[in-house]
Length: 217
Image 1: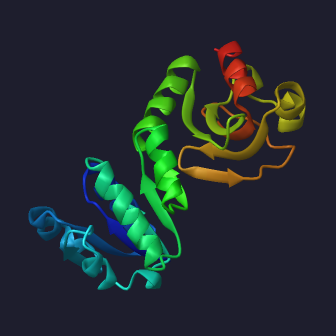
Image 2: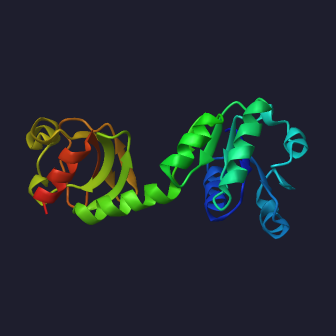
């Protein structure tokens, strides 16, 4: 469990907050929109209606006491930039800020953001990957070359063990987990037998995984 300061409760901020709540984090939400805070306050451990471009308002939040500070503002980049800078000046341990472009990312890092996220770009990339690869159920890019994919087990592998199908040797797929509906089999043994309906969570080179999924349509 972590203590989180979440500034900016638009669509992205609200979804982020809901996800953090499910993980059991203690969250303080802050936004200048009174209606938004009044609607969501009962769900959170603490809330505040405030303009965080005001240094005194941020000082009152005891910023260094939080494990992570999220700046989730999406409609006012100037505000995001200034709040990120103020949070670091006030001793924030770790600041994650939202960006929509590479230029915004560059400036946020310059003023002190420890990490920058691109919610719109990440969603667009996932959609693009799913459109260009057959039976891809989820996708997470680790860097420019490597990713983690959740993909369907090819029909021709059903009834074969992992060692017989040899996904790593033949296709560069490192099988991390098998998903059988709601059941999870982490780090499956080499003698695991693939069955109909199985999904694999695999790690490897993004290009090779996409080539594999397209070959096994």
